[in-house]
Amino acid sequence: MAYSKDYDTNEIVMLDVEASSLNPKISFPIEIAWVSLAGEEDCFLINPESVANWDDWDELSQKVHKIKRSELCKNGISATEAVNRLSSQLNGCIVLSDCADNDTSWVDKLFKSVGASRNFSIIDIYDFAINNGMNSRKAGSFFFEKKSENIEHRALPDCKQNIDICKRIGILDESLFKQNEE
Image (tube, rainbow, N blue to C red; front, side, top):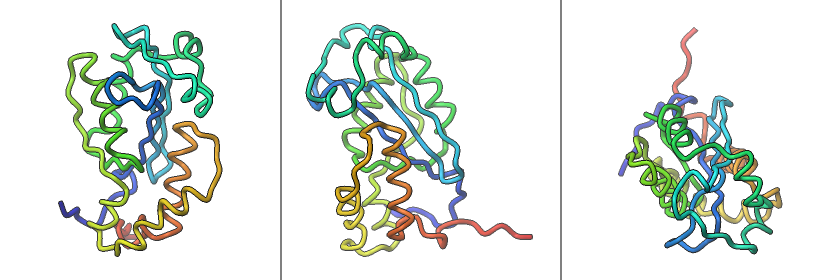
């Protein structure tokens, strides 16, 4: 799929999802964040008690993201509220992810839990770069850069780090964006 150039900075957002475990059959999203290139952002925890059978929990995953299930139950929003926020905020956006397959699966699980359909696409950063003319070696350097940086493994810091890396290596080059006429 080819993407058009001349994007608006509000149009492209980076998304990240933290999950209860890495088991694709039973895991569910516990934290979702997004950041636009214009600096808008949202981040929220999801209360697993708001969805029947969201019981999966992996202690090893908790050690990575440092989010306790009890914190989700106390401070998380309902699955319905999470879907409503994502639908209203990301509709019409180009949503990028460094792990689009997993993040799409978890976001779809969230939407399905409330009987809704996702109204935005989630695109892998690498695919976005290739479809905007970047060579595969340079596009792949994103993952090398990401691995070499050590940050807190939470959704919002991950989004911000991904945008910074994409700007630094040219995936989100200024030539992709509409120029304001003065």
